[in-house]
Image 1 (spheres, rainbow, N blue to C red):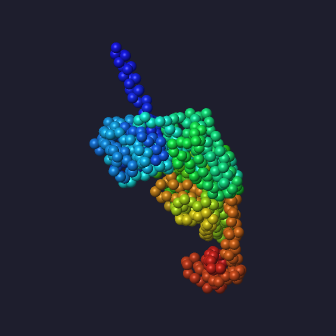
Image 2 (tube, rainbow, N blue to C red):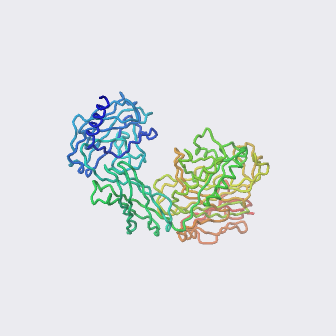
Image 3 (cartoon, one colour):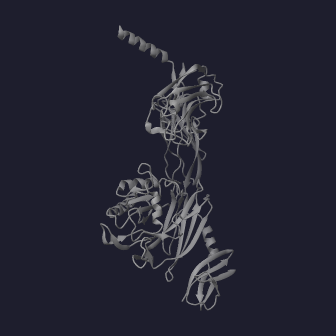
Length: 625
């Protein structure tokens, strides 16, 4: 008899829920790793929104209960405040208080009076708020795909749409009695950022959520770009309600350089001519195609030390990784991270900033374009003992946009060791923030010196010899606008030898600065003095002293050449007097103490000459023999 009664009870429970529909955007996948909080306030909360079109499809049906999953039970009085409302800021239709006995499990709220959907509502929100300490994560998501206008969270005294935060959907579920089957696809956030060249074959992935109550078996993806429209048909599917589905977008016309608007629409879901809500079936975005001959180089900065026994192996790994990827990579070796040595420059300790823990550094290590690849490290630094980590970081960095092309021009007077550096930056695309920097490094190859586990005559290459700018971080650039040419110039004198900044006795441990083995490396990238993950380098290039490197893709040589023509003056010394070949309006000569001197019968020595021509000033050091 007992078994029969249990069976009847089970049938009654099943019969009572047969016409009920669980509506929401998230599957019942609960993972404690998906808890989070927003902002700094104690008040936290989440809500989901149902659109007007979806409510019309549910007209006349009733909401009798909802379920919530939260990430912590440590709220004030272990309670959450729940609500059903037409706005997130107005008076709720219904509200209540629920005890959180256990986190990461469903908490059920039964409405005192079931709510009947009229179909006239602009929208409905159902959610919760609570007060909780800042050390606890109350909010919960499924980490699927973001869908616009459907998921909200409470942040610093205001409700915000979590679209674009890569959180996916809130674990909130609503029970609607006697709901009919409805078909509803909502297109999710798709990322079209990346480095694409005109003419390249590109493949993108788009995703959507099955927000209806029945499985999706087929759909069309209508793609329009540059006035060209294509339709891809997908069939033989079995996408369950609240499941995210990704699909490829192919055959995109990439022949035109520059920005291209793209729109993607999900249509004919299950072959139906009408679904519950088609207003959220489309997305628009912008693709950018760089010139077909675009040249970009990656900057690989290694961290090493003469006393590091594993560093020779790390150097070989870096060399092998560069060769294996086939990418255009410029390497610079910082002698920091292990201990200061013969090659450590004053700027080097600044770059310890990039380590995950600045009080516990290591070598051999490296970073590529100062990118942080989360699958490998929590900071830009990776262990150079692992060639796989190096390879992964290189490939990841190569997917990021370069934004600009560079033209690096150097002139060298070997007799005076005077080096003039000109850097031109041509932005192809406007950089989407106002915190960029550029810098110029000096690098030297072929230095024979001691290396632990390498011997007394180990050849040190790519050794960082300081900055031309005189600044570890370089110079700030606030405005990088497409087509707006930037230029910078500086002249320095390279000493006969370079002394490590960490040896007090400057008569010892000097490294000869061999001009023929030296080069200049220029780069430009993002900068944030408080966050070592926000220093992505856009592009870089290298030139041997006295040589130039204009990257292919630098499309405005005439602008640069005309600008240079205005400043190109032949300045020379004749019988103790500075002479200028060319048109100029003013000539001034100064000694190294900065005092202006008469330009006649100059004594032997080095002088600074300033010439104004065409409204622009040229400064140059000259040697009077």
